[in-house]
Image 1 (tube, one colour):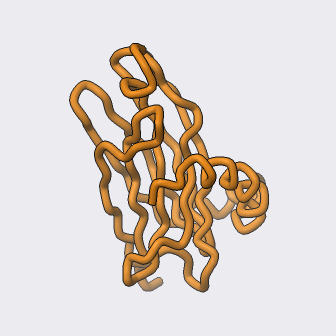
Image 2 (cartoon, helix red, strand yellow; image 1 turned 180 degrees about the horizontal axis):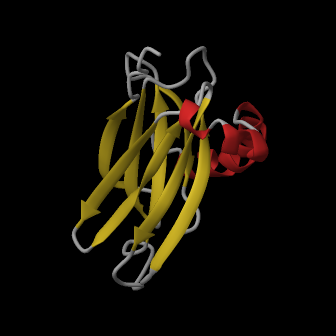
Image 3 (cartoon, helix red, strand yellow; image 1 turned 60 degrees about the vertical axis):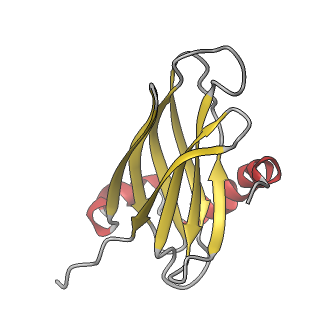
Length: 148
């Protein structure tokens, strides 16, 4: 799974196409309650990533902040990476990695594709070092939709 660099490059290209599956900005405001969300907080030593996953039909949006305590090297810098998974936990898509925090706190907002009917069943969010090595991860299940 360490194809982060190639995937990060592809993620930038896919994000534009994936966003087409997310609602338009105006429509999103009107229908914000229609999409479930999940929070996460992942710690690794004095560093962390915190944010929210919004579950769309064929993608997820990851919004939050990550912190790096020191800026010594890429090993001490931090970024956030996410994988979308189907029910058997096979990877559907992956993305993230930008911006990298080095001795500071940085905000991020990215979309990860989950291009299959119903979207992702799970998302695995990871705090990575500046070389895109997973340091600590959290598996998040898609929230159940309540019957209306």
